[in-house]
Image 1 (cartoon, rainbow, N blue to C red):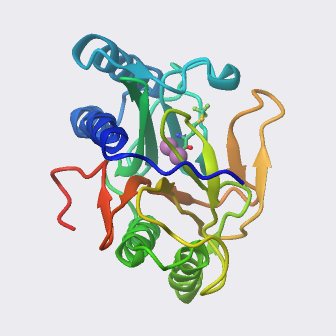
Image 2: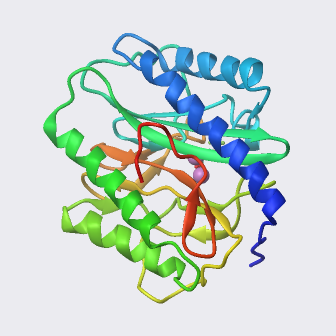
Length: 257
Ligand code: MF3
Ligand code: CO
Ligand code: CO
């Protein structure tokens, strides 16, 4: 493992990339309504990132990914491919995951949107998943471990009878989209890598209403779904570890943390 500690100058650049990624999520909010396709959401975000932000959508052509954002609806856990045939309907939940590159640095963030009238059980899954992310962020500071992060997420999820996806995790991020360390969303206190000032990584828990087990589409090689086709939710932020805690580089104006 080779964890790159960022300089203050690197972090300034990460702050810019993080803010742009967050602003894409703020921009797209008003479009996420019944009747729009995920293909259209992709086009709107692509145009905004390229033309307004003068930035690069990192997913496009990343290991062959064909679109600029990920759109994961209902039982899709992550890496859903935007599609003109996939029309959002009332009651859906959707994760939109945005990664932009600006001045060579990445900002990576995702949030859940509720489409139209959402059933209470789906709202609850979405809320508990966001709480998992927030509880993890609150404990990030030098001297803590990545195991502490995984543990607090796993505890909160399982206390509400949800399962944690294990095959996909948070990650170091900087000039490279996915770098060391891996940030697991389950684990034991005091175990694993010690958190240090200057680390930049994501936390992006995926919680399932049913089984934790996943299925990768044989059709497109990307779309990850729950094996039992029950709902899944995910929220993601990019963080920079400071001397006293952490800075959320992808904080949105609708959040107060
Ligand atoms: N943004 C995702 C993450 O949080 C990765 C998407 S990779 C893609 O790490 F190729 F699917 F876009
Ligand atoms: Co990520
Ligand atoms: Co992401």
